[in-house]
Amino acid sequence: MNQTLPEEHDDEVDFDFIRWITEYRGRQQRFLPPQFSENEIVAGPYPLDVSIWGAGYVPSFPNIDAIVVSADGQRILAEGGYIRLSPGKYKIYYVDRHEQYRTLPDINAITSDGANVAITCGITFTVNDSLAVQNVLHPMNALLKACEAAVRHIIRSHKHDELIAEEM
Image (cartoon, rainbow, N blue to C red; front, side, top):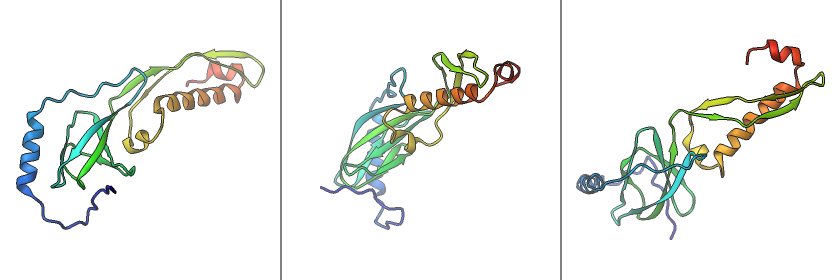
């Protein structure tokens, strides 16, 4: 069964009653916010069954984006609440958009003048593009490795005295 997400230019009849029933039933359920592992910013998948009428309900939470994925891999960023899709089974992934702080492990490198330097630093970040993040296998590991590589590059491309005098 080929599931496709509807295009914005689809001009099918909007079923106001179906939308009202779907939202009403969805709001009556008690949904807990998704639990993110310590070093993860993507949680899921959670099941989403879209009725024969093409109506589904996506729970929404503050500072957390919901991404609906069809069986053939098409992805859409959902606002939460009623969502109109082709009938079938979908998966919901949630992306944490809260501002977060992480401490990088010690970064050791040799400066351009041969001094051995170890730096510990932290990063503060928020997710700007939830669709891109959801598509990465381990986004936190990728972010931390990119930050470590950037700090190593700074250490290797400067002399020891420049690093001490430089504000980072």
